Length: 159
Image (cartoon, helix red, strand yellow):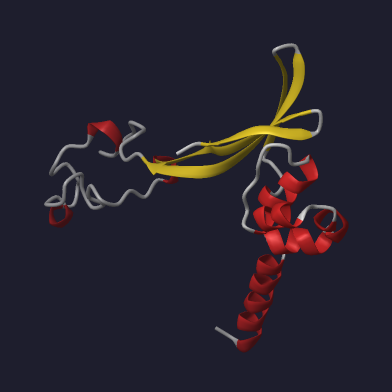
């Protein structure tokens, strides 16, 4: 690999890392919001925790921008829910039935080349699948903050 290519990759990586949103970055870019909080709330925000009664801006400093915002009506009052998600990946081998002895219909020894037929399912075997369709990605909520009248009224963590 040439020196120019290595340098270019290093610069791209540095830019990506610098662009990540952290608590410190959010505090530095919003010092007026952080300064308006009480010292105990500043400690909560700095540690990434929230409490009932915090403003939306304080929750933003602590948790960042939500992935989804849901609005609704609960007990006759308007509320807003900030949902934070993470991506979960699962490998589901043999998920799609297909030709050439891949998928649900694998049979040992069916691969047309005898030297590879000793592996289950032919050359690729049960541990490796060449198909990207065998990996399923989906979003899973892991924490939610609830607001009424611009104040936090509760939160939950999903395990």
